[in-house]
Length: 247
Image 1 (cartoon, rainbow, N blue to C red):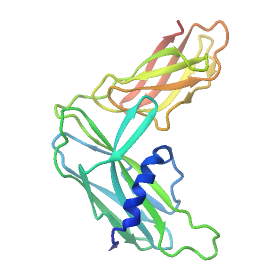
Image 2 (cartoon, one colour; image 1 turned 60 degrees about the horizontal axis):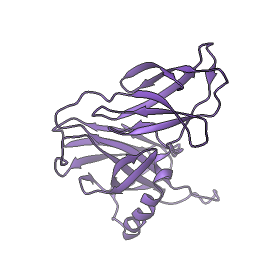
Image 3 (cartoon, rainbow, N blue to C red; image 1 turned 180 degrees about the vertical axis):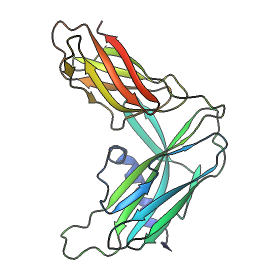
Image 4 (cartoon, rainbow, N blue to C red; image 1 turned 90 degrees about the vertical axis):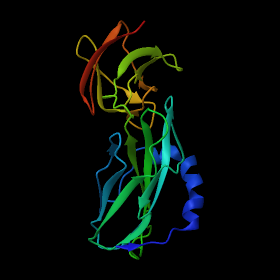
């Protein structure tokens, strides 16, 4: 693997990346010929470094360029901002076909405060020599969550659901996280008393609910006469089940 020089255009483009935070945070179709492991870094209190492996499974060299941004949420909006809390070594590299690059993710210092801190690791991937037989060479940006656990531990996040009227006059399901750790809503089913499953749509672009945040899922259609629903789903901590009433 060959370290690549850090380019000024990439740093200048970070402002555009932050402005387009929704695009980066939404699930993206990753290049079929690459693999990143793990896809999330969760640092325990006191842990200051971790490793990622970026594998090039294709038949051509690729370049990667890496930035770290702080990640917060305001309602259903994900907010990214420049951060100097973490460094990645190397910050850029050229990876030959069939090779792997180990990335070391290092906290410069323990973040201030006792609560959990969340970041996004942005890995911009570009082919070094685009295939001339293809009309377009697609650049991909991978957006990986990075968490630093609260100083005093704090256990797991907790999800609490309620129903509220939506701006459109229908109903929203509101997921509140009063805990000290993030929640990832991996699945969510909404069932009536007659076991009818209702469609549900996230209003945010990611399945995460950070500590102290509320996020909404829209119910496009609630049949007349339904006064409550049963929510069943899965978070990274395990299954949940809760009845929510429409009042």
